[in-house]
Image 1 (cartoon, one colour):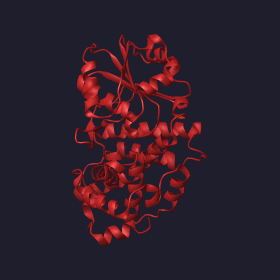
Image 2: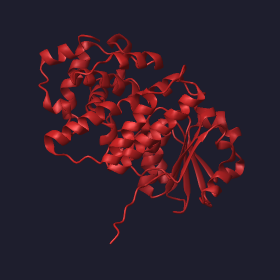
Image 3: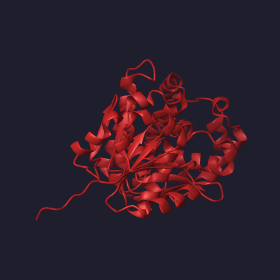
Image 4: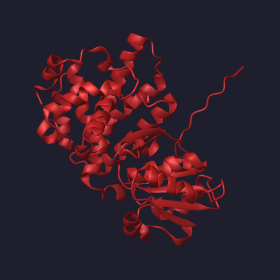
Length: 344
């Protein structure tokens, strides 16, 4: 008897220049002829890019302002009036994607992502980051999109810090995978080898790429694929394990303790990756070279947090979620943490 295997691969994965100009035909080419199509974006993004679309591309345009529970609830209420065979298109950055993910998951509608920035692997992942009523960010489960259309022409116009954040998110998989291996060794936690391999490849693709500038077409194309593959790894693993470990817990602790000082997600998890790789005894020189080349911080001064603040976040990090990582194994006393931070 043949066993049934199901993986939610993207129906559409289009990466290149001028991809959004012919959205209607792209959807038809992939047999996605939805009668009703709703665009979710921000007013600023729509004002800037509406000339790229045809009036007939969408039946309605809905705006969001923040990636919080209020915007999710408001979008849910608006989407409930549309038939179940409608397609929702998230056009924008991370907050648009996250709110669309959460709302369409609750309503039960299909959605497609057209990012205007490559800021994180959320463009194709089963997780959305939503700010709760208490002001804290929380990662919540969500359905993944039918696919992703990445127009390099658009993401080249995004602020450099958004691209740097996306690079950091991919690089942090290094630490997440080490934690996954440790969990297998110490607790016999199962590793999905295919998901592990995809996550590893997404990182290696970026770290080993020959490039001069992060705005280059080839670099952005590789980054786009890496972010999608990283998200796919989480979908296959049915967990964020392939892309989230101790480094994400430290980042979440920083958000929890110092929300007013929070940096972008990718920058925080990338810096925490340096800390965790040092704790593992790894040589950081190669990382430093790469970080400096792409604009990621390598010192506490560049990172924007003091030693005391980061030390407190490291102590709090293991309480953020029930996940076995290096932080579960080492003794997080002052001696260990001071030694960890002394070169930064």
